[in-house]
Image (cartoon, rainbow, N blue to C red; front, side, top):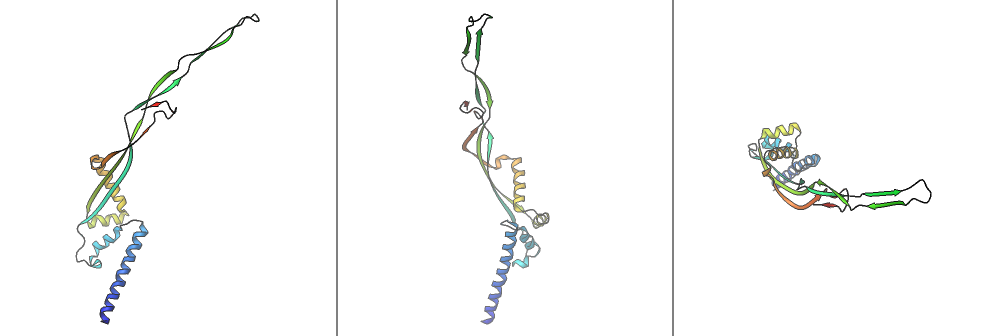
Amino acid sequence: MKILFTLIFFSLVSFAAQASTTEARSSANGFDLDLAIIADACNHPDHYNNQNAPTNIQISCSVFQMNWRMGKPGTMSFPGIRVLTTGVSTNKTGVGLGNFDFTFPETRSTFPCPNFTQTSSNGEFSFNVTCQDVAAMVAAGTSTVDYCDAEMIALVEADESLMVTTLTGKTATGCGMFNSGHGQN
């Protein structure tokens, strides 16, 4: 009974030490996943109660982003004012008629202006990697964040349809921003 208790005690202490080491690595890097642990499991599977190195290693990536896209151009107009002042004068005192101001009807100048539509996009990707890939990432100091970002950008640049994009319903316009109240969509 004493031997069983001793074995259980040392197993728990060993497990707690390994867990605290894993937690320290994870929190020190600021990432939820420390690739160095997987690289170590690839090189020393016996340390992780395995006989063989991992073979089905997958890095899962999920992305959500909000962007603005150019919408249908609008127009904006600026008011124009034209005032004409006339006057008549002579070199004789008391003969002048004074000045007269005439304001013509308002004119408008119309210019194109940008409109924007907000979109939200999301995508989920899973990448199969090998122990050699993981070792190379660890050696280069690449985190899963760096890996996912680079791989997803490459995929999405090649095929935008891999991201599910929807309109959020929000719009922004540059129409009228220079002369409030005079813009049109």
